[in-house]
Image (tube, rainbow, N blue to C red; front, side, top):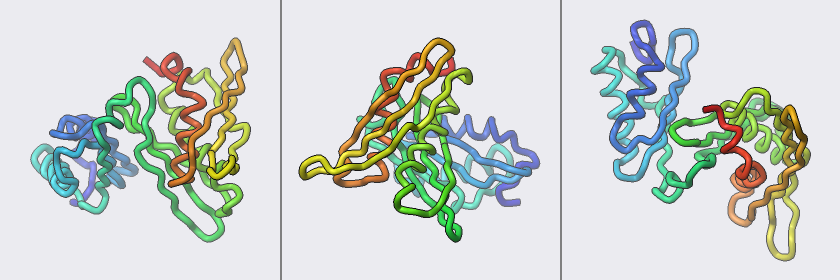
Length: 213
């Protein structure tokens, strides 16, 4: 059976994928006993197609279960990006449209974990930067203390001189304080990724202390 979890401990499967050569982190998304998605973050020392085959072989060898190659997505980052230190790194931003609504998914890597956050709203150009920012916060919430609250105060991409800059205002609330944080990132090449980087820029100084141990 392709992708079934009838005889598979998917948490164990996810952990073993993370041990494959070249793999830095992995996440298995499963529902109702079926593997829907497998996300792999890896270095460039092995071809992406080979990494997909490794995942398929691992599933077959350990559980006797076949995995459809189409549900395995591989993102490869440079060593410099993977060794960024004690702060989340951007892996990917994707968007799906359904009629007048859009769903944005932001994938971050923090240490050995892949964090996925989604936000859904109107498929409108005017609201898209905020949706991306909200999805970024949703990803971060998976790894920080539950008593910490985060919200997007504003998200804009104005022109400053000859360049566009993504500017995020993030509200950080703890039991003892409320802070308004500002982050920015140049948006010349990719406005989508610049929004994520602006949100991370606002929070990076505080996140190591907020991360769940």
